[in-house]
Length: 171
Image (tube, rainbow, N blue to C red; front, side, top):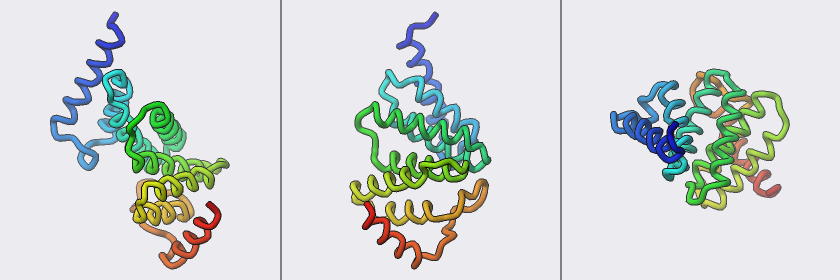
């Protein structure tokens, strides 16, 4: 069989070929996004953790949009595990993964979503990204994800700011 390094190089070559063909998050189909996440994840030995996490989070977001919450949760958890075990991961993608996982847990009716969303807000605050903080709070306050639907606030912005202050005091 193939050595682990050779297998990782092949996965990287496949992923890089897809990206070089002009594929990006806005033009890729759900299947291509899932393939990119898969190939970059299996090419970790080649230093692809950041790409694996980024494409994995995008695949998870799309899973949730299709109401495939179990798949989304699994992908978000995998992305967060990769972020914990690899250095140099952009904090904003970790915030996206935490927010996605929190929304997915809430969508599934499982506990723990509030703590996960609080962690996302805390990390956004540490990264000194105020726009992301407000966006994560807005997302966290919407009653449920809107699979397949538009991404819009379902809570008036004034209420979001009031709740933001309460969350900040709690953290």
